[in-house]
Length: 376
Image (cartoon, rainbow, N blue to C red; front, side):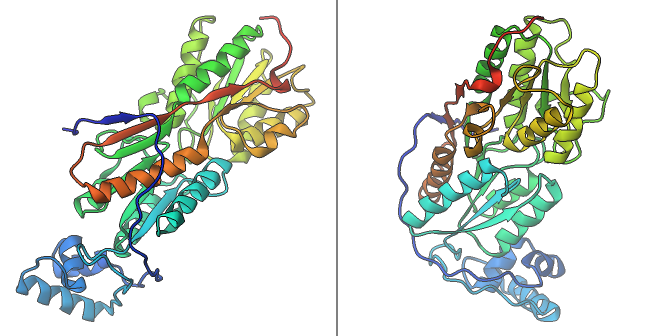
């Protein structure tokens, strides 16, 4: 059962913690040593690190396994209380995405002010890559982790990190069944504002293009279970469908869940535009998807907004310099990063406190890409 959750709307400031020295990971991992010795990762870490409690027999097995495998332990500066470094690991879906690039920069700035360093790992929305990243960070004995989870339904590797005493803060996404601190924007409210704008302009055939279903997309005709999608994308989709259900009979008609990336968004949008009853507006879930959507519209010979209105689910810097400027849902990206870092330091200071949800507001910025009204 999850602990009671605190709900917070504003987070400011971070606590200062010890300095650290970062090192590259060993070629043989702590997990491999633990498996060979027949002990848990936590026991292996204690035996190799010389801290905490481990039986003499377990320590002997761990040391023998390490010698046999040629394990070279990581020797960074450690917190004298728990044997960890004061590095914070940051695991994101796509560091090239403006959202994750900006939020990671914000985490880095806040960490620097707090005397921390960060280690950033990229997953491309692949769950296996995320698991590997988490295991690497555990081998590095990080003090905590900020994770943009690739799966809403599988957080076993994150729970393992928590069991080893490493705080996990979820950034932008929620994971079912994982009792962790979380910071995210109110994406559902932002999507509802964008849909209200489009519907108010007279649009009824509104497409939605998203990679919320992960790196492999959502097979055409397969049942859609929104609760299994990445939560930030699922929140937007739920708001999109709810708004359309008020004005049309088939709200999922123009829903396109594509694989991760701009090229997949381009292909999905071209398919939507090739229909005889093509959409008159397209909601792109984020700025990477928006690039694919805008290219597809241009290559199909359509104009924005005269033929197809466009909204993006976040706001990259270039949204204001496109022709026409792009209407966007604005998220407080820098504040999300600062909040994530503070939640890590709070958890380090008080490991038993109730988990906290920090939910930050979104707004809708209307620009020329949604100008004008249309018929149904």
